[in-house]
Length: 84
Image 1 (tube, rainbow, N blue to C red):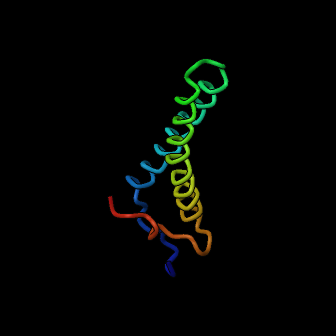
Image 2: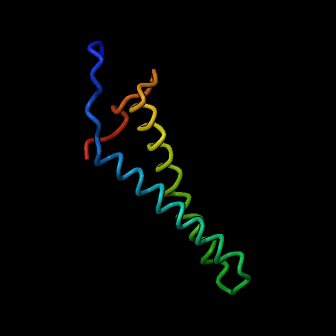
């Protein structure tokens, strides 16, 4: 703001975004591992990839917004985060 004070950071929402990013990454890595091992569980690997992507994409999106808002970049604010 105009006084140079940082806005209140919604730590709960930011931590949830980080958890989504981490769990999505783990699910994608597991899906790739299961799918590439040549086992009969290839469909499990695909389902892990889909679920991992559904977690990873919004997690990274909100993590990047939080990082840029925290660093004070113009056009980014914590108002994009819901009250949790």
